[in-house]
Structures are given as C-alpha cells and as structure tokens.
Image (cartoon, rainbow, N blue to C red; front, side, top):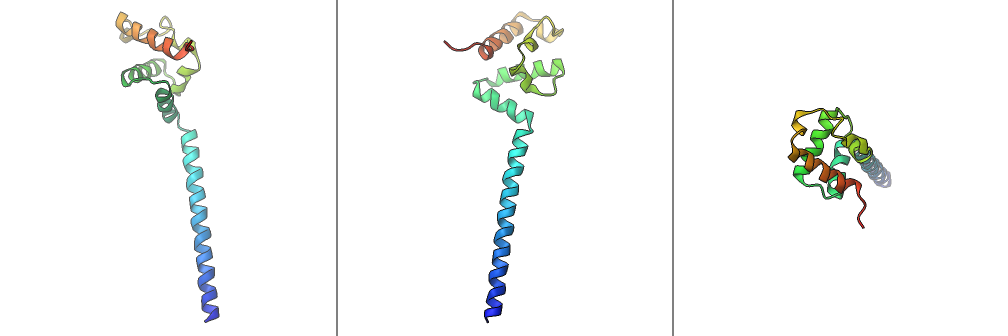
Length: 112
C-alpha cells in the first residue's frame, strides 16, 4: 500500500508542477502579446488621453494616409501632424483641419 500511495503522491506532484509551468507560460505569453501589439498600445493611449471614438477614427485616418506601420508614432512625432505634408483631399476641408488641430493641441499641450 505504501508503494501505491508513493506513486499517487509522485503523480500529484508531477501534475502540480505541470499546472504551475502552464500558468507561468500563459502569464509570459500574455505579457509578450501585450508588449508586441501596437494596436493594443494605440487603444490604451487613446483611453489614457481621453480620446473619443470620433477622434480615434481621425487618428486612424492620419495613420493610414501616412502609411505608418505603428499608429503610436503619432504620440511621438509632432511632425506627423503637419497637414501641409499630408497631401490628401479627405483632410483638406476646414472642418477636418480644425478637428486635427484641436486634437493635436489636446495631445501635445501640457495642462496648466
């Protein structure tokens, strides 16, 4: 009986170690997926800065028109907001330009 209970204990320990290894792998996988996901970071930046859905669509349009692979670059380079460099009829209306300027001001101006 003691040999059989020893095997049971050994099997339980092996199962516990396997479960622990699986949990650790899942945690690392999830963290890496979050770090390597520019779209997820973009959404988090939008949320952190209080960007509305409409403003988010405008940001995505800026990203698309400039051919950026990483949408987060809009938060790092104010030059990407230069409307003179973005030759697009879809952004030429005064209304669109006003929205872009207001959003640029919101994202790149420190609160007093």
